[in-house]
Image (cartoon, rainbow, N blue to C red; front, side):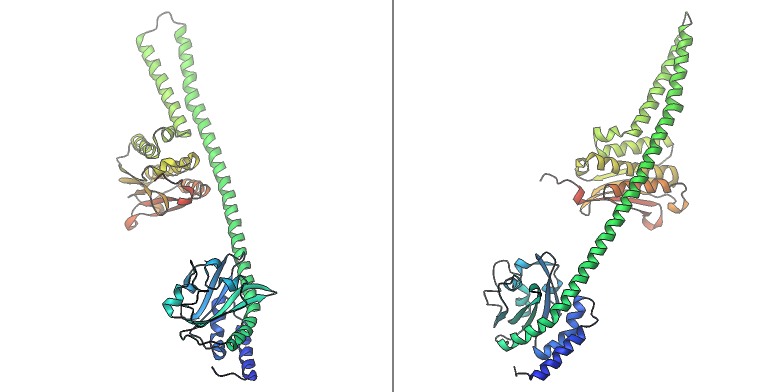
Length: 409
């Protein structure tokens, strides 16, 4: 390449500085200066890689040819073909042909894009701020033996111009990400706080309901039976009909008490597993309501749902219970389907019906809010919406794989 006059070089350096002004992100910055840089160092591919905070990963921002370097998520510095430069072991890297240069072709090196695009002659200069390496400027050409030491000197001046600006962009980007993470954390904490409050209120209402059931039903029945026994004790002869009536009343009271206990603690879930507990609840709820409702239970979890922590399992069961109860009480449906699946990296539970849909239901807001709260507290995703063809309702709760124990292979 022809040697460029100092005044001409200075004009190009000023042009690079001018073009950088106002650029707010990495891609736009490198693309804005690419043409001006090409007047100093012709290239077929230009990129800037930035080391992320912590120094373990880096990200490439490229212009001209698009390669896997720029399209790849943050990559390990240890696998970068120019890791020696990024680690400060080399002041610069100049190669006549990167495809055969051993410095770029070590075991595990992410050098494939150079082969795919035929990037042979290459220059790499560190981006430094106060002595710390924050990344690198790279220029590549398809022609071997293309760059010289004069190009290295010019590239060093360009790298010095870019360093401070890209350092500021990195700091701004890190601050923005930190602000987003902090905001998301606050939102999650507030949601969990409200969720815990809602669940506490729901539990308190449940305790009150159980107390009222015991007082108004079981205690009243037992009081009536006690008085009956007192009356019988004063009689010399007790008829068989009276004993039979007393026995029936006692059995009914015991059944009512079992029902209250069952609703307070899902013993079928612990004894027989999730699928059986759901099926039992479906059968009993439909039978007790007197509704003529077709039911179907599909279990495709391969047993993984019964390996969940008890707290998580009970929360999922309560959500499923509430969804089933909403269908039976409010949907006026002809059919209900409950699907248990190992799906999408976790466990999904769907409750579907062909009823009138959410818009026609009343007084289901509290139940839906409780389902959302229970799902949030076990880090599950919850959604409710129309079923197929906008007929009926579809409730979905998805528990991600991260919260599901690994199965034995």
